[in-house]
Image (cartoon, rainbow, N blue to C red; front, top):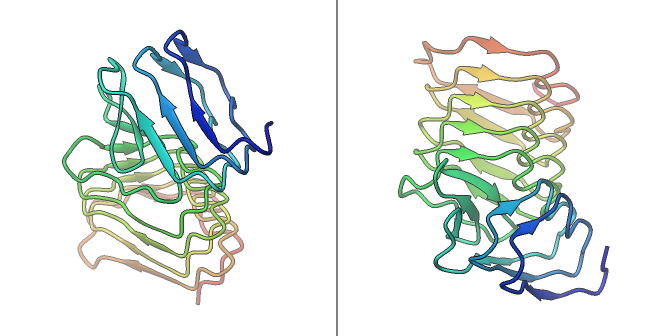
Length: 200
């Protein structure tokens, strides 16, 4: 934990970044991942609430960056985002990965139509997140994906199939949820999906 760390450029000699490597670096604003890094652990930027510029050096064989997002190229998974992220809508992202925005300062997010799944804890504890636009292809919202955010209204697309355990638990400002009249594929809303919400 380096409370005064503001900017990081990782040297080319590094090939792997471990779990929680920058967790709680609350002054960190900018980081560049070199092309030599081919493995990144989980929860890399958890509690990095000031982070606003993340990039991957061109030529990296596993990851690339776009819109202040780190994307695993082959799987089309957005693995990390930050408060200024704009998720690409060009088909390069089909899943928001586990913990991708955990405890970031993002205030609103647009999930593009290319995304089909939102992972575990993807936006959990984003206490400033008041708006989310779910794209027309989202099928699965994993466990605790939006745990304890500040959302007030969520509109689910007709494509939604599963809202898993605790997906919106603790969203105490969430008063309204809207499902499409044409949502033939909705299969399950699991336990505590909307626990401690203010739905009217």
